[in-house]
Image 1 (cartoon, rainbow, N blue to C red):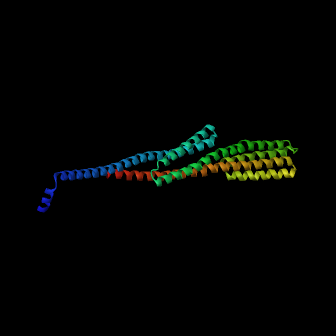
Image 2 (spheres, one colour; image 1 turned 60 degrees about the horizontal axis):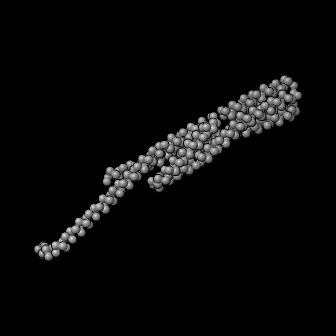
Image 3 (cartoon, one colour; image 1 turned 120 degrees about the vertical axis):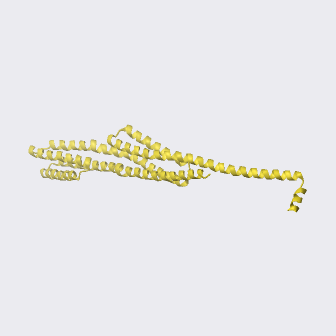
Length: 277
């Protein structure tokens, strides 16, 4: 110890001062970089937390958006309103833009993948919206115009025929009953009505064949073909709305809930990291 003390005493004062200053600078710089690193991590966590809170709010809005879109789909189906269709396309565009903005935040690869899945569903839904308008127009044209026109032609062909009055009246009664059951089947999917429609059409056809009334028989055939087209158009539309679009909306909601759970877990993890600083 005495030897060490002698050696220290033999060191010039300038060197002692320089050494002390160097040690102070070293400690200062070490402390500075350590504190700076901690502050940077805290700042990054705070930024991440802010992004997560924004994401939480946006994810919550996603479910509201898809629910409103489905409501507009049903409203458009009932009314065919062009104004409602415009609202539908606008709301869908807003939803798509919201997802694209969320994806740009790049919070994590896992969350980005979930947002990509939501965008994929949104893209399919966009195609469904285009089909929705086309299929509704076909349905409306077939049921609202095609069927009434074909029925008028059938009725005109019958009344213009040379069949005895009592035979005309009987066939006409069956024609009106057939139309009633056809409307019932299209509107309510009542398969008893479908069977009654088919039975009556066959009965009318056989009666016309026996009387040799080819013009009325041709009008009946045309009406039945138009009816089948109306049924197909109605079925395609209902399938799109109740199966395809409803399924897409359900898938979107499920993906959105999963994303929300992941965001909540990430938020809790970030909060925990901040508390432990």
